[in-house]
Image 1 (cartoon, rainbow, N blue to C red):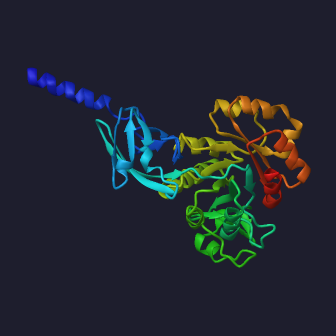
Image 2: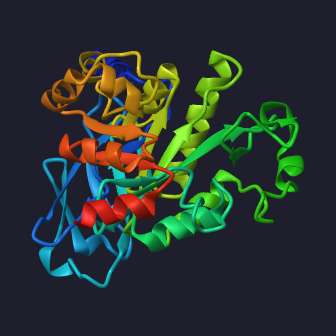
Image 3: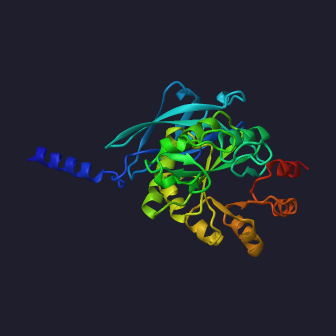
Length: 343
């Protein structure tokens, strides 16, 4: 009878230990994916379940890092200016499950000049907008970020384009194979998100500002957001990516998929307090919205939101926003803005 009671207790404990997010596969999340000289602490490590986890470092770079009290740090002697990143494997073990994932922890040498190249640096370079070439030009210019737009084909492949249509084809109703055969104005093929990200992940100076475009309905919008975050994770690109969208549901879904994702809202119809209450990272509005609601700039700063204005191509307007000390300015004229910032 005593042994039977023990068995029943063990069964009860096993039932109680089921993750609270049991509908999702257990995953590991980092609150930060960068390190820098003079700062060994990187950030928090956690899982998407209500259980306590034991974390262990695995692989060839395990000895370069340590986890203590669920905080990830790099061993100081391994901060090498010549190393752009380390791939770090982390295992999380709970009473009911175990998962192992690999993250790219990047040396933070990202530019801090406020300049975001809108659809890449295309206007003065001869590159097509939203092309791999325009991204590469933005990186060579030394912009802080390069913005680009993501849609999903009818067969659920993520592709890069600003408008929902291209050359008379609606992207949401067209296969990836058909889209991949299209030529941009420069002769370059229309890129997939996978190819685009891979082209941008060989450096650690320019962030990749990923706009998830609105789509035909809410269900498809959430699927689009989920696929984008999954690809960013698959390519270990979290250190590079800032997410933006006009669709508030997409912004919230990105956060659900990755609670530490940097997500900014574009549509201009919500006060800073609303974004802050939903724990968004950024307040990213057309310049005219800031002109009409100048007090929102200070309010956003007080709420801890990053501030970006788009699309600012006029020199006088650039100076106005620089005087306001906002965080970023998105422009089709990155060369001009870089000159103003350097003065």
